[in-house]
Amino acid sequence: MFDGRNSGHSSFSSRGDGMHTPEHELAVHGMDAAPSTRRGKQSRRSDIEVMKERFAKLLLGEDMSGGGDGVTSALALSNAITKLADSMFGEQMKLQPMYPETKEIWRKEMDWLLSVVDHIVQFVPSKQMGKNGQFTEIMVTKQRDDLLTNIPALRKLDSVLLETLDNFKDQKEFWYVPRDIEDADHNGDWRRDENWWLPVVKVPTDGLSEESRRWLQNQKDSVAQVLKAATAINAHVLSEMHIPENYIDSLPKNGKTSLGDFLYKSITEECFDPDYFVSFLDLSTEHKVLDLKNRIEASMVIWKRKMCQKEKDGKSQWGSTVSLEKRELFEVRAETILVMLKQQFPGIPQSSLEVSKIKNNKDIGQAILESYSRVLESLASKIMSRIEHVLEADRLVQRQLMGEVETRSESEAESEYEETEKVVAAETPNSRKLSDFIGWRLSSDTKKHSSMSDIEFFHKVEQEKEKPMMKSPRALPKKFSYLAKLENMRSPSDRH
Image 1 (cartoon, rainbow, N blue to C red):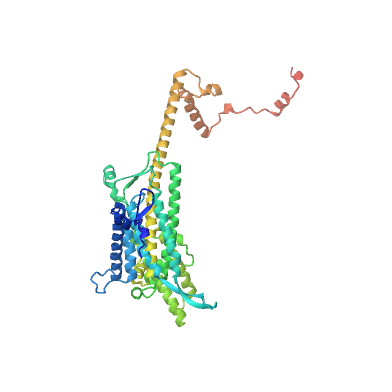
Image 2 (cartoon, rainbow, N blue to C red):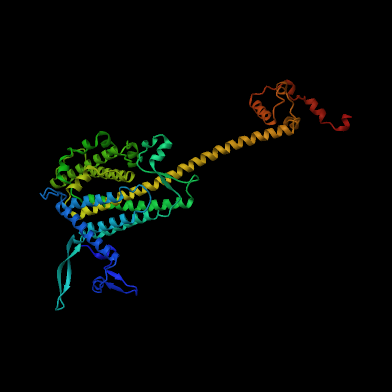
């Protein structure tokens, strides 16, 4: 099960001429083995001891008394993978590479736990040629199809996440400040933040560069693809698990009781929009999201069981008002809501149905797939959240800079206008007004404001023009009689 080649150590020592001398030959010649060789041997021995201890606990079902009261092997393996991931990634609060020792432990112990799937096989027909040249059909062993497909995919997703963390090794455009130092500047307001236990992200005063911003977005998109794949594998494995009887016994008799009147009416109405339905709900806390998920999953289980019972017995348990087609439609709507909730809240805890399935599952292959995909889903969600914190800090700095630029522009415009007025007033104290060039005759009211500036005077006149004007009789044009018009039409010589 354990291969010494994977431990990174060699059982040979090196000579000065570039050739390698086995360790037993060094002992024959009276020479001691190299210190690195001894350390490698001790490391290999300690790895074997640790591996024996781990698998002994798995065989005991986490019951150290040996009384047989432990959990199943499937649940023991699932718990082992979950605990290993918590110890490796539980303190991953920053975007930084894993320590080499931590990464080595993670990969080595995961290899130990995943080595079980190499022995989960199925029999498939094959042909074998005999000595006489004839083919004979025999049954050969092959790794189970779901493990053969999903285990390499999960290993690849695991490598992508670790490589993503390694990509942040040389970044210098953002850094972290301990929360207690930030607390001194904000008078204890940090506990109002939902991520109050995490260190605070800091970016330069002018924000991130455009190149870094695009690079961070690319990293986020890559991790989002990993999250999507791990979530799909986990959801598929959970859907394949058998629903425990104790969970079914705890359900109400119908889906309406599980959902409640409001949710049941919203899902079963003629016009159903899942986006509007989710946006209309109160999902402000994690507890409310989890409660909604539990209600919808319970109603789906009830509907599926009753539809299966109807197909089996040919008797309707819904009543005459609800058809089988409508119940299938309601189930599709409920499943759509569950998918949207999982996409919108990737870090949501497991529902009651999922916990019950994992605890009562006895399929070791499904237990390994579910736990491995779940821990990768959690790590991907955590990395995405850390990247979003950096981008949010950059957006906050950009908004502050834009606010400062707008304030500065307004103040500069006001100061320039005031300076211009002062310069004009100082250089031309007796300058003619705008009305002098236009030819307007000022009334007695307007003469009182002759000391106005040209701009103020212009605005004053515009306001006066907007008022209804009463025409003076003197200003009216003269009306010429018909004879006068004829007189004006005479030739110049006649007029003289």
